Amino acid sequence: MTNWYEIPGNENDVVVSSRVRLARNLADYPFEPRLTPEQAKEICEKLKTIYSDGWTYTDFSTLSPAEKRSYGEKHLVSPAFAGKKTPCALFARNSVYIMALEEDHLRIQSIYPGLALDEAWHDAAEADRLLDENANVAYTEKLGYLTHCPTNLGTGMRASVMLFLPAYTAARGIQSLAAQLSKIGLTIRGMYGEGSSAEGCLYQISNQITLGITEEETIRKLETVVKQIVEKERQLRERQDKEALADRASRTLGILLYARRMDSAELLGLYTTLRMGASMKLLEGVTVTMADRMLVESMPGTLTVAEGLEDDSAARDKTRADVIRRILKEQK
Amino acid sequence: MLCERCGKKEATFYYKENVNGTVKTYHLCGDCAAEMQKSGEIQTGFGEDPIAKMMNILSGDDFFGGDDLFGKLIGSPQKTAERGKSCPLCGGTFHDFVKTGKAGCPRCYETFEAELLPSIQRIHGRTAHNGQAPARFREENEKKQKIAGLETELKEAIRTENYEKAAEIRDTLRNLRNA
Ligand SMILES: [Zn+2]
Ligand SMILES: [Zn+2]
Image (cartoon, rainbow over all chains, first blue to last red; front, side):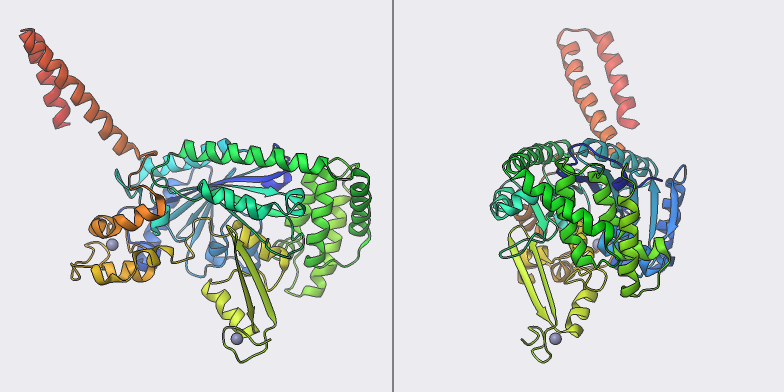
């Protein structure tokens, strides 16, 4: 299966990925913390029969810590799920990953590269329909889908978009953007704040409320806002000194191509400059997708699994440099 | 600088996250950082790897499951008039709901609906679902609409003294209601 981050998506100069998650529960079972081991097993067995045709099943609790982490790093499962020690299962088909026994009985997720909220919603809804046809889903007409946490009642849906906003960040526009977004029921997450340097310039925007709003409205609102942010980010980029940017991006590429050891902190800074250069077509042969692949595939869990490493950071820094070089040399 | 959690050991760990403009920073000793990481209060990913840390925050719980926002909203359970009431499916009480901010099972919502609605409204601004429904509810809704339409037709048939048609509609209605 090709990973989402290996495929160039729409508007990928600014939009990294689009994701839709649905929280679903079976009506006749308590939520995860109150489940007996037998009930947990029953749920898993039931889901195995529902998600059988064309789906791959993984007993998540048998994976190594690095393998679990790698799923989290690729944004295929939530960090909470990646850290789980109790029995849990993962079902996968194309863009869809279903986390069984996370906090809710099911978290159905679909992830796409670039701006593709409709596609993600379509795929998640299709997996939801399979559940609906074969199980008694917890739902009331008044409160909608019943979830472990009342903050997810209603549609039980979180739609989110990951954005790359280096120009916004440099213009110190994120704080005011956050204030505006929270007024219209959207949430922005990221590592930003006073005095912070460009820490990756990646942000996640998602819907805050789920009750009293339809899935369609949620997606349209998020999409409209994201498109505005994309335009604004492009305008801000246009105002920058291209020659200076090209110089910085090319030097960065040089470091990435010739470094023999690369730690994560250094890579994060270099990634931002490289992705910016690639997205403005200032670097011949280096694409945005290469930059994203480089970031994801050099994260500790993924690196450890792919390269068969021991959990030792010095070796990881050397291997990380090798992996980066391999990806960037794919340029024509 | 000393660890802000235990106040004893030297802080060697700096953690910062930002959700909707609210910046939280922690200066912690290694032990406290490990404990908070274990309890899920902070998400640091793989050791202190900065990229993993960032990815964790980004991918973070966009389901807001991690905080006890709801528990705080409901406040202290003193206004639980029916203290003895417990959920028939999971045995949870309203006190349990308040303590954790989360339901014990789907049935808890029905059991404690009256107590919960004000807080649900404060979170979402609304208290009624307006989205997709499972098929069994969709069919139920369609049936209700069909019955309402037929009842109107029936009245009209009786008014115009079209008794043959009225009898026909009455049969259809009976079948629908018994289905
Ligand atoms: Zn401490
Ligand atoms: Zn219950």
